[in-house]
Amino acid sequence: MTTNKPLLKVENVGIRFGGLKAVAEANMEIYKGELVGLIGPNGAGKTTFFNLLTGVYVPTEGNLLFNGERLNGMAPFKITRKGISRTFQNIRLFQDLSVLDNVKVAYHSSAKNSIISSIFRLPSHFKNEKEIEEKSLDILKLFKLEGYVHEKAKNLPYGQQRRLEIARALAANPKLLLLDEPAAGMNPQETHDLMNLIAFIRDQFELTILLIEHDMNLVMGVCERIYVLDHGQLIAQGTPEEIRNNPKVIEAYLGEEVS
Amino acid sequence: MMTIRHTKGFWLSIILALAAFAVVQFLITGQILNSFYLNTLFLIGINIILAVSLHLIIGITGQFSIGHAGFLAVGAYASAIMTMKFQLPFSAALLIGGVAAAVAGLIIGIPTLRLKGDYLAIATLGFGEILRIALLNIDYVGGASGMQVSHFTTWPWVFACTLIAIVVIANFTNSRHGRACISVRENEIAADAMGINTTFYKVVAFVIGAFFAGVAGGLYSHNFYIIQPTNFGFLKSFDILIFVVLGGLGSMSGAVISAILLTIISTFLQDYPETRMVIYSLVLILMMLFRPQGLMGTKELATFFKKRAAEGGTNHDNKQTVA
Image (cartoon, each protein chain N blue to C red):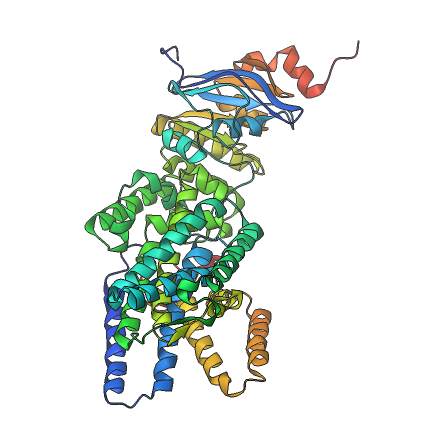
């Protein structure tokens, strides 16, 4: 993991909403191929941090560098095209579209044919559509969703919807994948499968993954490094073992020790 | 489901459409159709174009725009000016009418499409009204007394424009660009996160929709001998909106069917001017009570035929696997 430059570098990043500092002076370095966890109590600013990385919010201070390129103020869709894609804490699928079309939408920017070529049904349209369809079916097969291809996304069971969202995020061809509470609402068995899946896609797609999670088993089980966020501050980082024994982290989660 | 279905079914529908064209053309040349029916037919064609173009904006892209009569007016006046003041041929006038409306769509769309839901509706409604008031005060186009226009609209023109509008919008919808528009409708934040330039696609849908509304405007103005700003009030916008909503938001065949049905209903109700609006409103109220998703829901006519055809054995039907 000690390869030259970090894939993602967060330098002193902060955002304030009026007087409220949601995230302050955050520093983070993520290297290619890592699987990093971001944990913290409710309201610590984890999702806000994701929104900063994906361009939903623009940081009021600091720098976001991805592959050495500054992301501050870039539109979300451009950041996705640079190679950061995400899932959402509260699932945001295209509910009324089929499972297949959900994934196809994410392959949108990998195709290059123009609007004109689609309107006049030129060969490049068919070529691109065919490619998109093949790639989409492949990725759905990988996620064991091939039986639901023509099902509407909203009709899937909850666990499958989570899987579909990850599949869709992967279809956007990211270098860095951000997973916002992927195991929320899953039972232990589903969580276990998800852990394996996350480790598997990291290797299969040579991805770098940053995930937010509440489920400590999952975080401690798959992450190589963990950052802890509390009240908008990154209070600790380290291996799962270090984090487990870090007094600051224990304090953040369980409160101060009574002396 | 969306891919490469424009092969057999597509050509079949083109052949059917051409057959319908030939039949009507035969009836016209044989003078079996009188001018009343012919006029209704033209109106149906124009309304289909309007319904389909608004369907792209509201049904596909999910942008609630209710100033469509404004684009109709731009097209109507632009093309009328071209034929009456510059003596251009009708074909060029139609195209210019469409382009003028598309440009208007671009100018209106870029600032207003940042707005969402109700706010966009109010802004586009405002655009339509501003345009109408402006036309009332421009003497070059006759102001309130209207503008004299020669009658150029013929059945082949109406038919060709309707067919082109339907094919272009259907092809656009069934492509990666159309999917991008639908994803904006379904969940704009997620679309953005998937790398879709949501603003771009909203504007594109708006411009294409405005273009065809403009073409419809050209057909509309050259169908009557006079056009007045009052023809393009917000009631006209609502008429078009009703086609789209009644047909089922997101269904193009629904928009086409409801445009045909409502045009026929409202034409034949002209014999009962006192009760016309009452009956028309009743139809709409009943429809919304008993079938709020519209005639077709989000389905297309083609899917009903497709159901029968085996499609690789995958479970294709949505309803079967709900449980």
